[in-house]
Length: 486
Image (cartoon, rainbow, N blue to C red; front, side):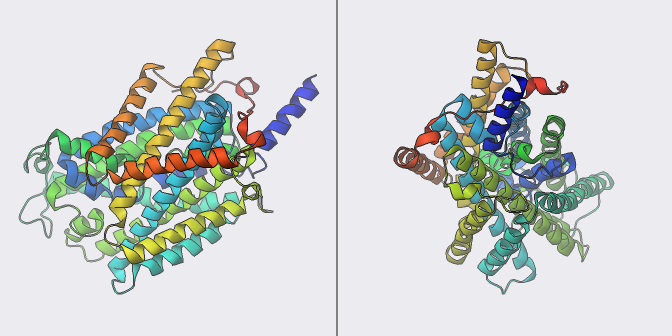
């Protein structure tokens, strides 16, 4: 009887996508999540958020970071219970129904594609700092070919590459925080600060904490939530983690807090060095500010760092979208060719598809280079928030099933259940409403609504057979020692 059960579980696990190579350890996973969540949104997009809200942007990042942490705890609980590569796409299919899984999976692929296009756009802008005479689209094409090749290698090689990419930018952020604090404490005068001395007073001396009112704070959430997009990559790594019950809780518990601290402390330092309304007037605000310190090599060093950050983010984007596509193919929600595995344990067809999608970035940068980032960021925010809402809804359905069937309690339970989950879903709904209120982000709702309609039509026309059934996932709760939630 036990052998039969194990055989069935083995079969289901294989169908869920565990044929992928398990080569990612906690070091890889922790820094991969940082790779997606600390990148373009901080180094380039933060300037837009600051201009919308002023110093109040710090409050926006605190609120947004708290909401994202609750999403991650919900996802972490499901990932420990069902460590599969399809992650939240398969969780939605199991607990909300096959159509929900189809929409969630494909919307995440859409999100990663849009975010990756934003990232390659930012990369081309950074390269323009050194090579202003070279067209942006040339850099976009070059980076697509390079990272596409990297993602076709084994997952362990990919994990190592991502680790070093992320380590460089994390060290740079820490140096920025320490250096900024030293400048504020000792009162050094920056090179182009317009005579304004650095200090905490800059947070309130230029229109107050809310120079653009409460409306400015709300407007900033569109960019803030875009910046946190990609953190859900942690859940996707469960299918390739060497010990998901250990590494997923560790990554979930540490990364969101670190991301929040990096954003709040870093931007606080930036706005203390210079008045908020002088930040981001050209290129990355980090390059602009360090250029103002009068250190000749600083802008070039920092530009190299933000380029590394963009490479890291694109790397994680390609990985995340590819693994979700792999899970969709296993469920019958995508062409079977996406489930093909290379001899290195990599779903190579999904990597090629992401490379093809990113070629759109080449066209966009050639046609509308000045407007592409804001447009892409707002659309990506809609897709990101939609995926997070589906993660939370799947988690609520799972908790209800656990209670209804009397299943064992989760090993990595979400805190403050159910109040925190309800408040987080309400916040996500508010962000979607905000996208429609402001004119420069309203296009995100038009594109997002059209996308959902197209998915509905595609599901009705093409999904057949096993794709119409809920995902069957093995509950691994009682198979290993309890993991203490902290």
